[in-house]
Length: 267
Image (cartoon, rainbow, N blue to C red):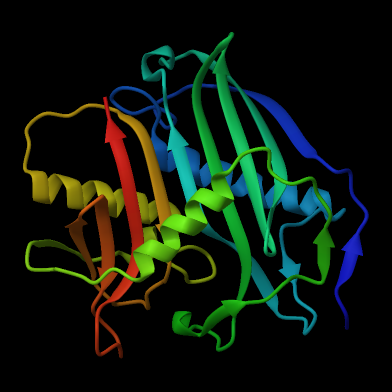
């Protein structure tokens, strides 16, 4: 079975209006983890639309199930106070090519003429080489490949440069936060640590290390994802020169493995 280029419009977009309830909102501004889950699903749906599928179940050339795994996300929230309980947001989502077999979706959330927030999600396709073993995850393109216009921004280039720099950095885990993921809430349906859980772990790390009694909403957060964990592994949250990092010290690894890096800014 060989990969086939799927005929598709050069842009795949959708626009919906969502009413804001408790689930969509934080104490101030948007509930980042809810929106990551929701827009992550929209990202998958847009990929399915781009290849003419009515399901988000993707297969590679060998017939194995593949997943659009996120390798970078960015949450930019310039106007958190324009999102309120009972209000509505217009959400425009567009899928683009990000080069090197990657796809990027851009989601713009607006209240009238005001852009309340913007999400960027970039994915690459992976599969399990061994069932149930997350260390066996490897890249594998699906059988149907969409042809799309390149993304109209430099997100792929920026995150690629940052990821290369992060991979070469060592670790200092003397001051850290120990996090024990819960299988029932932190892992997704295919057994991988779900990418919104990384965001929550970063919040726990910030809270544990900074020990501040104050709080302010996020202005921006960028997360780079490098590895996943096995069920039962613990996660270590630590600070670094330009943000926070998550590490895994469990399992068979002799040395801690970097899971993700987060750069963020609050109001």
